[in-house]
Amino acid sequence: MTDTSPSSSSACALLFHLEPPAAAADLYTPELRALLFKVEERFGPRRHELLAKRTERQAKLDAGWRPDFLEETRAIREGDWRVAELPVDLLDRRVEITGPVDRKMVINALNSKAKVFMADLEDSNAPTWDNVTVGQKNLFDAVRRTIVFEDAARGKSYKLNKSTAVLMVRPRGWHLDEKHVTLNGASISGSLFDFVTFMFHNAAELLARGTGPYFYLPKLESHLEARLWDDVITFVEDALGLEHGVVKVTVLIETLPAAFEMDEILHELRDHMAGLNCGRWDYIFSFIKRFRADPAFVLPDRGSVGMDRRFLSSYSQLLIQTCHKRGAFAMGGMAAQIPIKGDEARNAAALEKVRVDKEREAQNGHDGTWVAHPGLVAVALAEFDKVLGDKPNQLDVARDDVHVTAEDLLAVPTGEITEAGLRQNLNVGVRYLAAWLGGSGCVPIFDLMEDAATAEISRTQVWQWVHHGSALADGRVVSATLVRAIQAEELAKIQAEVGAEAFATGHFERAAEHFRVLIESDQLAEFLTLAAYKDL
Image (tube, rainbow, N blue to C red; front, side):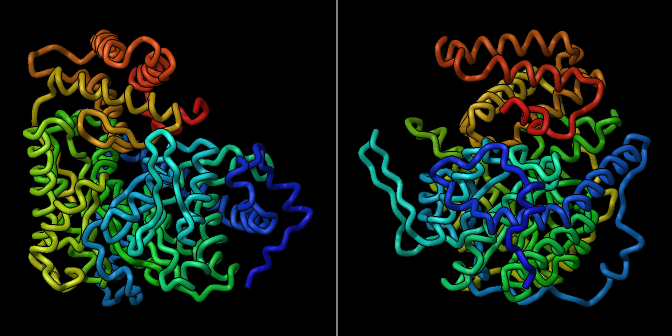
């Protein structure tokens, strides 16, 4: 076991610039802080090296280089190997629900009748200090089944049912810092802060309860980044006296570079691997971002880029084939629709979109899928039940018929750019960022549950259209001047809808200014949330 006892050097070097709020203060013990110090000191420099490699790769892409499957890892792709045995309580993952870590959401999601709840410290959680630390307390209580929530305004009390979903946790991505904690004056990794805190308090408790510490890992761009995660996990398992391999992870394939390294990512994490997931909204965002310099890669309206498009369909089916060859789960993507109250026709149409999407995923061979709202669990479950029957998964579906090339993964979807699409991007982007600045990272907008991924599509699409002088379907060029004018109109619509007082206190003007600066910048910012984090 690695020594994690506090030392004077760690106490001096690792600083909490704000103490956690009272609700979570008891979690951040000297022993936890000592482990955070050791993990950040050991692995922080490698994280920064790998982030620098992302910058180097982007420079090559901007210069015209195009990705392909790696020649140097061909032996891994062609080798005969499988991931480690999967735990019993993860064998059936046919429907998973995701959401932020606020107390009520955690209870409702665990009670939703989904097989898994992914508690999200990343894209659907605005990383305020309170959200990050109290969110860990909510998970601490959920693991011990002591979590309750009293809604005094509605006179309702919430607690866990006898049978609940399996808990998985998504820490922040490698690119995100935790600015409230520094080591030698530099912000530590948000990923490591989230992962280590949860592991320290909950890994042994979860194992004692017959489950385990299970995670989703976001935003990876290479197998080297997966190797870093594997080394971190192994180090923390050892530090906590746990058996090697008890941690299980599912990696989101939500960046274009990662799509070319799925075998390699599985291989690096093979002792801890549970599967891969089609993070399709972030994948579209990554597709735009990585080819930002090339006008040939301009995408049409967001609403027209569905999973039937060649680049998305290819990536989804390649993921299924790759995972099942290695004995890992192939998880489908998010259904962002939410139930619509008071309009039966619109609600029926929304549920039908979900049904069709989940039917496609189940028939293609996915082992499970994601929904964003408890009201969609039954719809998704019904489609997977039709295909799975009594089977817990589809690991036996090899998909040997799939033959995906680099050309397939890089096929640019065609279609129109419309004024309506531009308005939607500007409206949704401002609404989401305003909510995020107010501390909420998961927001219902126009009957969809929006998180950072969909806001990023909105932001990068508008930047792409302005930067390349794209034309709307009516012939007008998408210029910065046109965007400013339409944004002003959309902002006025939002103000009229929410009222003057809510508009003034709701961060809308700050969000619009952030959006404007990001759209008009000569360089496309890597992440909206990085640009806005200092203002959170």
